[in-house]
View 1 (cartoon, rainbow, N blue to C red):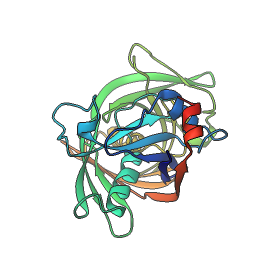
View 2 (view 1 turned 120 degrees about the horizontal axis):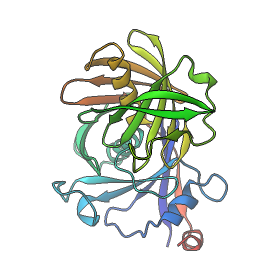
View 3 (view 1 turned 30 degrees about the horizontal axis):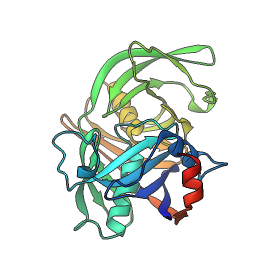
Length: 276
């Protein structure tokens, strides 16, 4: 039994993609952890399983069974609601392999349906849904406490404005209010570089610091607009892995950025069974 895989990234937030339309794979937390390990596996920030919604027992109610569903797992094996960079890679895979009709199509996720558009240049625009502001909370990095704005983009974020993102040590898990975020939180730190432009670094829930976080860039854009007493607008977000563009209005948001594939192959049955 050879298990096919692809390796891809969106602004260097990297993923192992597993085509599994009928949900046949037993995708255990230990297998996800091993796949994402950069010594004993392929190395990635997360795993994207390509599965029909009807083959996934915990698919959200209201998602059509024939929709392609992004079953996303973080590197620690935890199941996550949404991944903005991952859904771009996922959509690019569906388009490149002729699994959808036309450049515009829906993708299912645990945060609901996400409309996607694959552009001729390979970039992908994702409708990220409505952004909800959750109020103020704090995070602590290197002994310094930063006040931030809680933002829900289908998953939880806390965005803090700092003078320089380059000065932060994000090698360790920053502290945060576990009563405010009982299921953990993605922690974004931003500095303003222009009227509609920011720089961001992120410590992702269940992963650590990553080169990018798609939902995090949307949350960061919302927080940047809030500093100007605005709830809508367009923001360019620079992350270590590249640049994306975010738009936010009263009822929805979009994220546009690149999606690349770098390799494909098969996992051996012996390796797969080692980590059952």
